[in-house]
Length: 284
Image 1 (tube, helix red, strand yellow):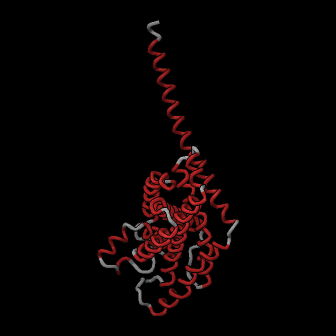
Image 2 (cartoon, rainbow, N blue to C red):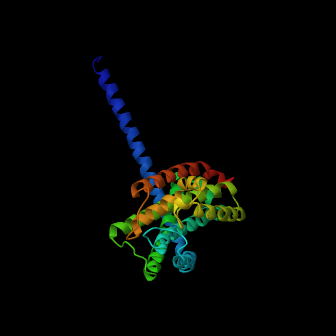
Image 3 (cartoon, rainbow, N blue to C red):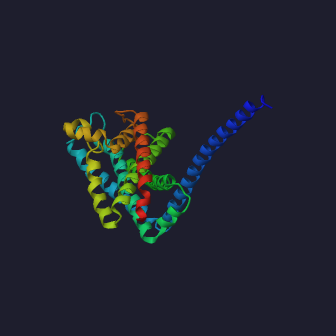
């Protein structure tokens, strides 16, 4: 009997270790499943108002048709061997993703709080992280429509696009990551301000600095030193850089596609953690 005690202890320890591992796998599976459920519910809202996708496509189209055409003719911004309209196309796609994500995430959260939907989700066993990731994923799906609009308009304007399947898939990945980052950032703002009026004002206040403090419409080398520093900590810079290196036939990336995606992924993880901690404050 004495010799069997170590075996019993080891068997119990192995079972406990296996149980902990199964618990971790179960938790990850639950987060993944609930994230897809939240995302599917958010995407389903497009069926009730599909015209929102058309309205969102108007602003980037005007930027390409008016701003891009004018600055291409006057050649005021040096972009090397790359035509300015080609240089700008990637930036306008990133700008469209930024605007859609900022004004979708936080505003939708506040609407759901006013309708009492958020309280029901917080009372459910759904992980807070899954709620945040689900909305971010749905925002990314919403922004995919902007890719096809910008691609179609760019082809009509003579922009030399890289239409290889791998390049298109890379563009879709970058759009999803960028939309997730800015949607989560918008959700954080929505958790703090809690009113639609403040959300609208702060959203308008933040989108333009984020846009102009990036390499969307001019190279980073033209910026003063202090603006170059802000540009390097701006996630939109890495979104534009990745898009410019993949969607254009003659495009180049400053930081590299892998590094751009890594920065966006790390930013998304950090913002998701912060938003998950702040999410219960919406119901207060």
